Image (cartoon, rainbow, N blue to C red; front, side, top):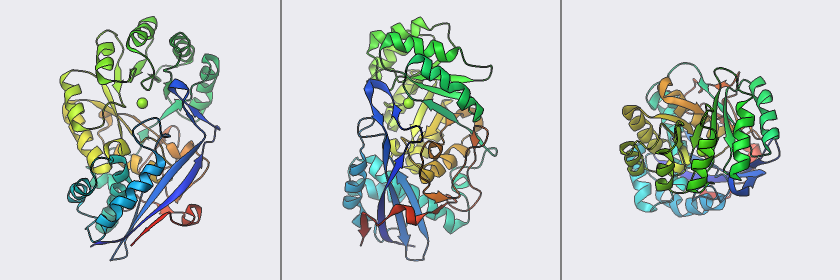
Length: 367
Ligand SMILES: [Mg+2]
């Protein structure tokens, strides 16, 4: 089987709540997503999606996905999409770095491998654990009272895990954590995700000011070393996210006992193949994970669901249904949130049928 065509589409995904705000005053109102379509000489077609969280979250941006695909695309024609590790080595040889560009291609090829073998992607990624995975809800950065007021509505939708967007003014963040924590019930989990927004001494101050609160602290500072210094001085369970973008830093963080949970995002690591490698390593090392992506719609959410569903339940801290945050649906058969959980499709591949009428004309079509 050979890749015969590579296409890409630009899709706008407006947010249901109007905007999503996090540390440092950053926000997004309409996500700019890229859907990748890989066609083969046997008629099988696979889809993937890459959707950065704006241009200022990770070293990734929406137009960069498309520009990178224009560079990478010609190297994919004629390659076997089912030989994923070999294909990834080929992509890394053709285009140095720019892992997020390759993520959509890799996801689309897992979709093809699944269809070719008659198996859902989660079974190919290691096996299906249970019939559903537990979701968290991100609470956009607002005033403490506004954030606390959101909890009841999200709980009514079934969410029991909440990720607070902090990383703003440290004094207000202390109030945010306390206000939301006051709304929690037994069994709920609260994460305060600063998204690199605090400097080291302020991160330690915030954590010590809420030392009596049952809250996880996620990625307080910009660098790994700052986060490690904070981690060593505070009592809370600790999550690393932005800094963990390859196996080298993951192994170093394990050796340093730098985190209790790690957030692995598919496009941050460069696709399902590389995220599977990191995920399997985390399971072997006893590190629990949040498994997700930077953002996306139905196709990215389907890929997330397969990754999460193929992870042993005790190591899956939580995962995300990004498609429920946005107003546009791009595929039939994508996972749908039910009582705060979702499940990966039992159909071959990702188990989705793209709504091609939503995509518009391709922005890239090779050859
Ligand atoms: Mg995070």
